[in-house]
Length: 211
Image (tube, rainbow, N blue to C red; front, side, top):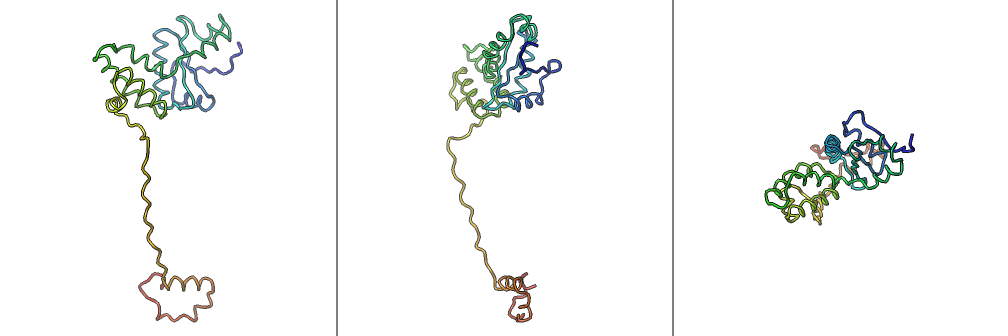
């Protein structure tokens, strides 16, 4: 009704992997839009957890939180299409929302808070399958926790791809032995009439070709 044609709504508040997978096939960027209250942020966190394994390096997710008491319908009616689209363009990135939520319950000024932060980050980073995104989030976690990237990888039990790879040694190909019997078979297949001229006592009986 208000000219926004690239929007869909889930039934209820549940966002499933099926929903996210279909959206990624149809769009280059996905913006989740939620109410700004506690229930909206809780629903957004569930959507984030569903999206982490499906995230692609070239198709970003964003999270838009409307002012408290507003939903997409009420906001666009009050402020219009352009205002909602402007908010969507400024929506928080997936990594920003993830790290912000992880930081919220931990005091990063203390060793204990940083330790809890790393512990809370571990299950979420393990879900990320996009390699570049995973590496970038890992670096952010390491910086916030005041540890090196190598220490963060060890603490989070994350394996990143090595910067070089050693080529696999060439497999030795055993030489192909062509027996006299096999050569004779080739000749017979080409000219079956030659079978009457064969001297069978010249063949080695134990070879399968002689059968």
